[in-house]
Structures are given as C-alpha cells and as structure tokens.
Amino acid sequence: MSISNLRRRLHHGDVDGRKNEHVDISSADALNEPLLGSSNDNGGSEVYDPRRQDLWDDDRKKEQLHWSFLFSNLIAQWAQWLANILVGSGSIFGRLFPFSLDNQSSPVYLSPLQEERLNTLRRRLQIPFDGSRIEHQDALRQLWRLAYPTREIPPLKSELWKEMGWQGTDPSTDFRGGGLISLENLIFFAKNYPNSFQMLLNKVQGQRSDWEYPFAVAGINISFMLIQMLDLQSTVPSSKSGIRFLELLGWDESAFDHLYCVAFRLLDAQWLVKRASYMEFNEVMKSTRTQLERELVLEDVLAVKDLPSYTMLDK
Image (cartoon, rainbow, N blue to C red; front, side):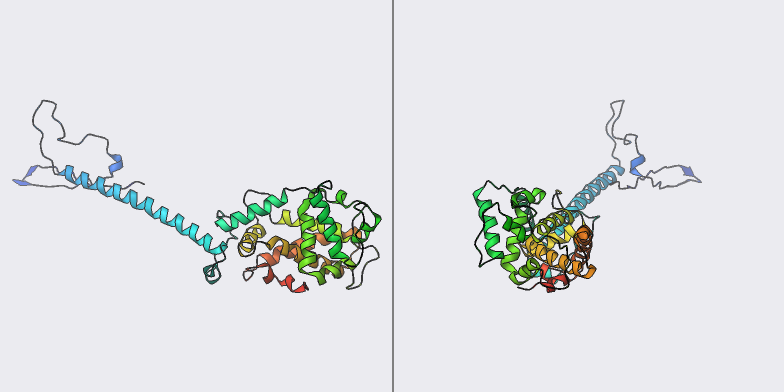
C-alpha cells in the first residue's frame, strides 16, 4: 500500500527586499536523495531541519495505516468464517439469516459440523461391496427381510434374487462402482419409507412397461448418479447442487440417504410420465438428475424435506 506524503521544500530568495516561500508538494515514492542537513561531510555540527519532524510524523502515519489495513482484513476473514458456521451448524441464526453458498466464484468454507459429516459420508463411499465379508452378507439378508418379510431368505446365490431386480443369481456381481453405500441406501429406503419402497419394488402404480427397469440395479445406479451430481469425490464440492447439499448436510447427517429416496421415487414418476421401457432407462435417469438439480437450488430449500419431490414419498 503506497501512501503519498507531503514534502515541503522551502526556497528562500530576496526579491524586492522580501523573502518568498514556495511550497512544493510531491510524492514520497519519487524521493531518492538523502535528507538535507542530516550529515556534514566537512565534520561540521548537525543543523536542525524542521522538515525531519514532518517526515517522521508521515512515517508513523504510514505504519498506522498499514496495521489498520491488516486488522480490517483479519476481521473480514473471521466474519466470513462465522457466517458459514451459522449456515451449517444447524443453529437458529442459520434459518433467520440464511447465507447463500451457491456462488461458485466464492470459496466454500465448511463449518466443523459440515466437515465432519462430509468426511463420514466420504468414508462410506470408499467401502466396496465384498461378498466374502460376513457383515456385507448380513446386509443383503437384511434387505431381503425388509423386501419380503413373510418369505424365507434364499442362499446368497439363487435365482430368487432376480425377483428383486438383480441381474444375476449373485447380487454381489451387480454392485461394481456402487459400493456398499448403494446397499445401505436400499436398506435405508426400505426402513424409512416402506410404503414407497414396496410400491416401487412391486411396480404397483401406473401403467407399467412390458420391459420394466430392474429395481435393485436401478437403486445402485441412483447412488452412483447422486455421488457424481453432488461432486462428492472432489476435495470440496464446486457444483451448485454439491454446494447446496453441504447446507442440507449441516441440518441432517442422513441428508444423502433421504435424497436417495427422493431420487428413486422421482425416477419412477419420470418413468411413468415418459411411458419408458428398459432401453430408455438412461434417458429417464438424466431427466431425474436434471429435476433434482433444479429443486436443490431453490432458495426456500433448507432440508431434503423441503424439496418439492419429497411430497411423493409415502412412509
């Protein structure tokens, strides 16, 4: 920061017996000569010059302005940090004074709560499904019990798994990039919205296609689609949907799972509207993603339950 100083040069000359004083104002940045009177090459005594006091005062002002600038910047940074805590911490102030995080040109600051929940979600994303692990096998059996409460659980390799919408007799071969979280999403859907889960599983609503989408495999694709849409594999999500999702995560640690249920219900609704068949599944998935992206950036959406499509879910 450059601050211009006033330098006064007093030139004395006798004109008509009087002394004229001229004041010359110039920038301190242009000064490169030593101060007059500060030294005497001939060993004479130092001469007092009033201009030295003016320059000393100017230097003090420059230092004060410099520290004021640094302090104001520090206050601004702390204010931004506090604002993001209020947004993501679930406090009442976040609802009363909603700060928008969907401006892609600004850096995204996570509150400690948001950062903790985002890291927990990312750890879930990194767990692949392993059919040899007992806990993963038990999760598959739990899904069957939730889907068909009155039926006996089949072996882990059986033709009966195809009834749920797995492509083969061994469900573990269908997970691929979906990972364990896609199975957890299906279990969460069955537990928290059992009526909607059963309706989609058994295709009981609307005029269905002769070649329907496979329920379980569709669920894995929805998990994968949400991970991409929300930009969850980046260091910090940068898409508008991803940034808004961070706000939802601040309110609800299960925001991803609830959003999964909304997406699945929305996909089925889009499927019926388009009267789609199996070969059009990717097109329906794209339109589902587009609709979710539109709803996520609505200003009055503070939680997953505020999404317009959430009203289609039935517990």
